[in-house]
Amino acid sequence: MTIHYVQIDSPVGPLTLAASPTALHAIEFADNRHPQDRRHWQPGDTPLLAEAARQLSEYFAGRRRVFDLPLAPQGTDFQQAAWAALAVIPYGQTRSYAEQARAIGKPSATRAVGAANGRNPLPIVLPCHRVIGASGALTGFGGGIAVKRWLLAHEGVGDLPLVLTP
Figure 1 (cartoon, rainbow, N blue to C red):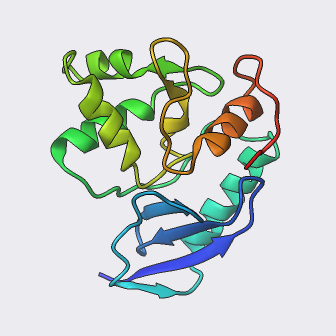
Figure 2 (figure 1 turned 90 degrees about the vertical axis):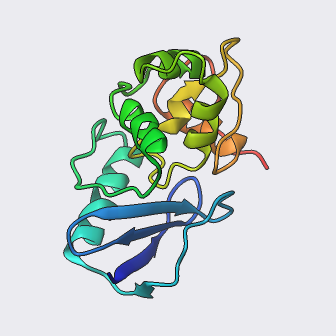
């Protein structure tokens, strides 16, 4: 299957969007900790990539809180369950890794949930940035803690400044 990709600018840096003709497969930050296998990727815009870019632009402009895109993240059954739980965390709210583990029926799998979130191929759309440590700490994020902090501040979570610092 051929995956087309485009790069877009965003307030959190360049994002690479990748999609098949039927679903969005990946959103990658410039310094993604776990990049996708790109062997079947080729550059090229598609209607779905244009729609994903439009919806992300609306999100960054504060005009979109929920995404409406066909998604096809690739991962294990456990990862799929963890990512599905991300999709139901409302805009502007957070959950702990323990709460996410309980939500998927695996209450002792807090660390495994964190690892799955770290490999989330569709950040922002599947909002892993909304998952924080039990103490409220902004723990790990594939795009970096500064980006996680910015996304949460953008959504009005807590008392975080809307500033990206290196």
